[in-house]
Image (cartoon, rainbow, N blue to C red; front, side, top):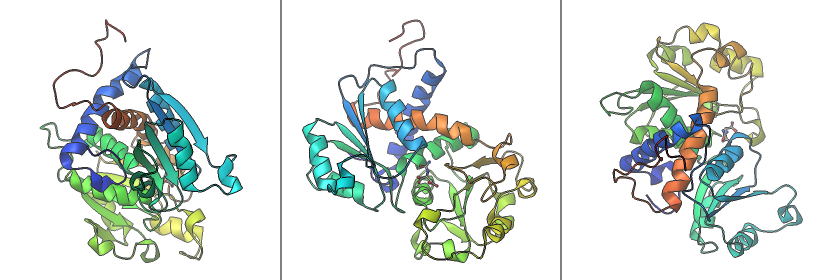
Length: 326
Ligand code: NCD
């Protein structure tokens, strides 16, 4: 793996499968009474969040702590950023404090690249969501969840599996990272959105596109709903929320057209009643809460692989056996 994780495109199929395998091993830790490993003892992970977050920030924090790293949480609100401090000066401060990894979420697309390639910090940089650009660890946790439910037992992973990604694709870093990663893993992705919320240049993405959700659902093995990102919208992208929901929302009637094995996903935060109804979000097909659990294991795997320098392709088990707790 490279030193940084900035884009889902940084991951070859071998890299992605290594992360997923490592995450699978670490996932079992969540079911143990003592959820901690000493792997990153003495390392420092800084969570640098310039944008709001619930799941992602807490997930990275839990992941780092379960690997025994020291964690520093930095939120731009309440910091010197609100006094006008630049990303560069913030980065130099973190470097001076000895960060080994910086997990960054920023409203500007490309901010994690700037951090990684400017020479301001020596640490590994992990993109936790940059503007409308990318969110690679979300794509990894989604791929992990898909593999657990739909992965071929013969190790063929997601080859040929059909994933529909539905909603505000234009503003979604989750959609872009998933489109790249799922294609790398062999899945077939269809983006479904109103024409106004389909990105310009989507023709160069490795996906199919559709404006018709009802036509796509019966063929899908998984449907991933996206939040309408009003905070990134300046104009009117659809007539009314009600009209959006009627055409592109997932309700019980639409869910009934899915195949029996198909699963429903959402990265969160959900706006119940807008892109997804409560009965769908809480249905047995929904793996939305499981995505959150899987997120911790996947982020542990990413931090471990970036920071420990270990070669996990070797056969040594990562977890101690149950009878010999760490
Ligand atoms: C997403 C994000 O922030 O990009 N959420 C997440 O990380 N789980 C999606 C969103 O905000 O709608």
